[in-house]
Length: 155
Image 1 (cartoon, rainbow, N blue to C red):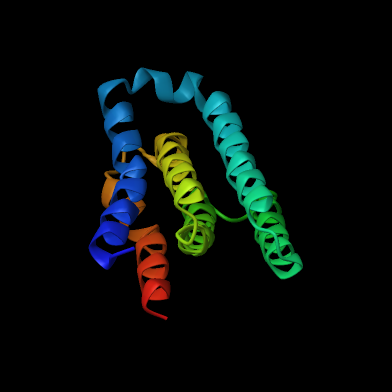
Image 2: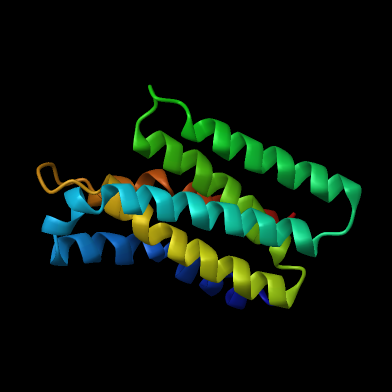
């Protein structure tokens, strides 16, 4: 795969955050009432992302690595003292690693990048606050996804 295709795919996957912020700007009254649904959707999409990765990888080491990443993200969800920004930053960084790992298989790459895009919708909807303008923080804190996925491409 050429780098430009890979880079554009990572940008498109990352744009789920932008779409999530735009949705909440359009319908701000739905943010409070849909919060429990956004949380459930985010957890379900994460689970699907990791289940798909486990089924596509065949080696025992890859199973071990993916299970450790899934465990870290699920453990991270239980940290009450961390804010949503820190949780999403770590989660998106780990998803950047998984994005790179999935680039070796075209079918998995399409599925994973689509699911990461969909994962960004509820997460950005949860984090966005109309009282304090924080949409730039959402994109800045989660840049680990773009950075890690594209740096790993050259290693």
